[in-house]
Structure formats: structure tokens, C-alpha cells
Image 1 (tube, one colour):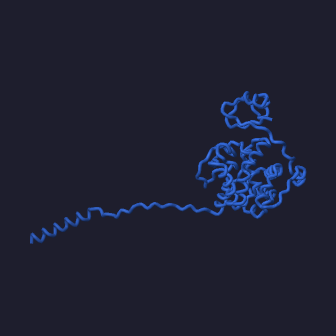
Image 2 (cartoon, helix red, strand yellow):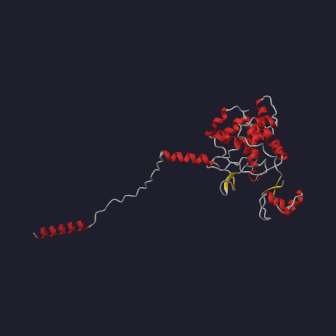
Length: 288
């Protein structure tokens, strides 16, 4: 009998201990939830327009040079321009004219330090070397090339790889006027006079002769008077003769430059809107 009561008591004690223990809950690891960003249609439009705006090329060089410098530039790069015309379809006359305008016929800072003849900026896809240069904004990123031929090839690829330049390649390759105006229409430059500048350079230096060489067609020289008549009523006056420049080098002073060109320091300052005698390496000075 006592044994029976003892077993009941022990069982009751064990039951109470078991109910006092907290129940174990299975621990679940937190799951990281990444929200996927949903682009609305209007978001995509904004991105595309911004990208297009970033890729518009604007002439980065404001230097003025002599005809001798321009002719030297043409002699040096006409072969490369014609080669690119054969491979990519961009008229050699247009490529040369843009190179002359964008690089100041090879005298611009970007051209000298980065072999960048067309002012092409880095953009997102660029993984090569680059330099910083003040343009539309301070210290913008511009592509740097090992040699000028790479810059010329990149210029052709730039035009052939952007869909908004596709209408250009429906034009005849000897239609340099159509190409010049088409570049402006496609957003290549914001300067309203950009087409006339290119056409003026092409006709002044007879650059369309290199298109004829590639196409195997007859080349007809354009007289300056005829070139002026063929332009629209809104065409500005023919460009003035290009002016002589000096690019400031190591050790240059306004005094030494004035002696070199037989011009007074005050005249140099007046032509370049300078308020003092401070100059820097790479600065372009108009001499006459």
C-alpha cells in the first residue's frame, strides 16, 4: 500500500517539473529580403535622355591657329581619316574638319596631353586611361589614348554605335554639307553655327578631295566665292583669317613671349583679356 502511494507522489512531482520547463522553439534564421527596384516608363525615359545629353560632343578647343598649322595637321592625318572612311563610312572631310575644330588643329590641351582629337568624354563604358579637363563643368573626364590613330578610330565608332546618328549613314558619303547639318540635327553639338564651321573648314582647305579619293570620283575644287553663294541666307560671314597663337611652355613669361613675336606685353594682355601678367603652362595666347 505504501509503495503504491509512493509511486503516485513521485509521478506527480515529475509531471510538475516537466510543465515548469519552457518549451523549446525552433530558431529560424532571418532571411534578407532585397527589394527589386521597379523602373516606371517615365524613369527609363529620363535615364535615356540624360545618357544622350552626356554623350553630346562639344568643341573643347577655342584656340586660333595659322593656315600653315592647319595644313600641317591635314597632311599628318588625312591618311588616317581616309582609312576610317573606308572602314566605317564617315566621310574623311567631316572627320578632318571635326578634328581641326575640336583639337585646334592639334594645338589644344586635350590633344597634347591625351591624344584626344575630338573631345570625347569618358562615359560609363570607358575603362581606359583618362584625364581631367574643364569643359561644360569643372574637371570633367576625357578619354586618353596612346596615339592619335586610336582617337580617330574611336570617333568613327562613336558615330556608328549611337542610334541617333543612324540617319547620317543614309546620306551620300560625298555630301559633306548634309553630314555637317545632320551632325547638328542629331545632337552632336549645341553650337547653332557648328555646321557652317565644318563646311567653312572643308571648303577653305578643300577637304572633300579626300572623299573623292576614297570613292574614286572626280574632285572639283571649290572657289571661295562659290562656296559663299551656296550657303543659306542665314549663313554668317566667311570666317576671318586664323590668328597666330602661342602655347605657354616651361619657363615662358609674357616678356619673353613678347620678344619672340616682336609684340608688346600690353598688346598680348589686351588680345587675351588678361588683367595681370600671370600665365600657366599649356595656356593658349593669341598673338596677332
